[in-house]
Image (cartoon, rainbow, N blue to C red; front, side, top):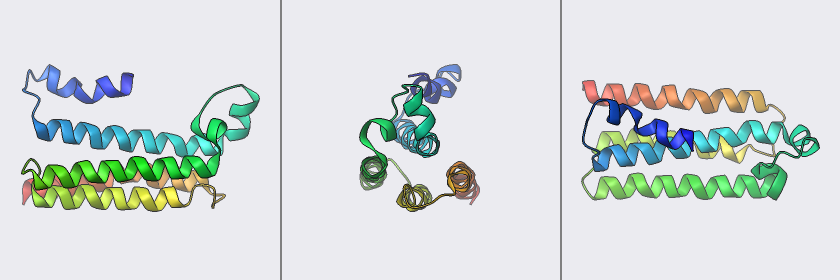
Length: 141
């Protein structure tokens, strides 16, 4: 739950109004954080199982975890598209956010099919940099 609350902390401390755009971005980054958290959980599945730690990979298996992450990514894509169509999200922002989701879906497709989870974790974390740079360019342009 701390992750969810931390997404709204900048708005609270700025004493700003929570706008539809802020909600869309909070949902986007929450799902991104959630999805990126599951990649190391796949890598640690044996240790987690031995220590009775319940993660998606230990409870439902690697293949079902991959499918669950596809669903979560698709829901995030629908939120971005819906926000764009509703006029809450500028086109360039939508393109940047959707490009980030495409990268996330690609990384998710490698779960259970790759032995290099460190690289998947790194690329998942670099997705934040990619999206942030894209949003910065969109704001600056």
